[in-house]
Length: 138
Image 1 (cartoon, rainbow, N blue to C red):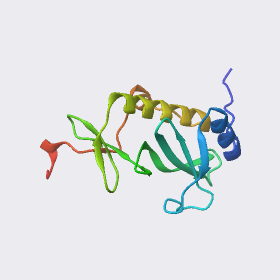
Image 2: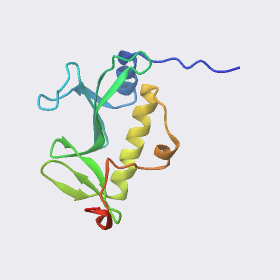
Image 3: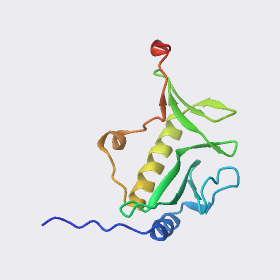
Image 4: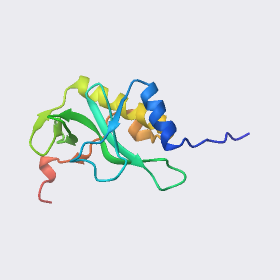
């Protein structure tokens, strides 16, 4: 018999994340592009979420999960030979511990939201941008 997947409400997702020792707080003024946005953080990683208007997805991701640098959520950039965390002002090489923490953060956040976990994303850290120097300008 097929299992019926129950979709949690946005408030259920926030309480689940809070129960799993995530810091849940209203998004800061500069990042608050949507009313009722929340910043979810733990172990140096953070993401911003808001209530979704779709009935089968309670959470809308405003900012992809990333490492926090200088109070800003950094994007993960893959340059082929190294992964970097990049903000509007700063770019630093990513360490193995940071990537492990980010992967764990993403997985636990998706699990709490009841989101679908894709195979390629479950294998490891996926980058927000891929910038290989041999492909630049082509």
